[in-house]
Image (tube, rainbow, N blue to C red; front, side, top):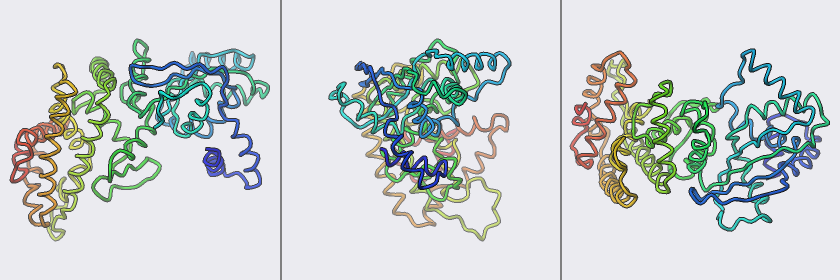
Length: 421
């Protein structure tokens, strides 16, 4: 971990090589914990680690990893007069030795959490900190940084931290949503973004062939299975809510979505089934992306021209995932199917889907073009109502892919999919 931290800071701050030794020695003390107290959350099989560190050690971790892992996606610093007054007061209080509520950090690990004890938890935390995200406390972190810049004497002052260690990111999502219930929280999408980086890391690990481009990569999609990394957040919302349309600005709809997600992420089978569905979408995308439209045609205005166009935008992606979720889990508002029923359904879907993909992969370019029926797709999409066109497209694809599931992928072409709306 020490080498990774030193390299990260050297690249981020462009320090001189001679200074790297000093940084290396300092980083060894990042987040050294005292007064450790462990509690095992048996609901989601995670650990809550309450501990004390120093302001200086916390900010060293925050500057090296915590800020990069999340700050850009979390809520901006409030600029109102009252907010500025409260922030200035907090900074002044910190400079005088005030204690603030614990900062909550989420950590994803592959370790067996049943074997973690007080004497080995520090090592496990050290191994996971590079991917850690601040779940609650970004505003306080900013105030701590400002206070320390004004008064270096508080560097060794104690602060409390609460670290949640879980096997994967889904338990962290569940814990965060439950913790925020009853507050005046961000919308559901922004809350999900709090653990954006570990969620992306887990998706890359779990799904073969997926390529997720971060916003700093500035890469355009060049092949099937390649997506903006932040699209995974919306797809997870689509699966957990079983809806293709998410309305984060609608407070009532947002609260129902939050309830759906909280309920779903609290179930052990949720993560596995979501990633299995996402893997099917990637395979579908890769298979149809082989198709290349005749470039000699003068149809440059077509929305769906080459095979890769199908899953480039969000409507088809959310429609496909929502259709699978409804088929596997049940319709929104209805009693969810049992884990055993869900496993039986998704296994049957995967079997018929594998045959579907094998058939597509055996097609040449001309056969694949005839199978995709993009002429019908373009005609139908162009006829959708212009008002709220994005929502209409999402519903169109969800209904189409639901029909495909209804026929167990046993279709001669996708024309019936595009006519199902």
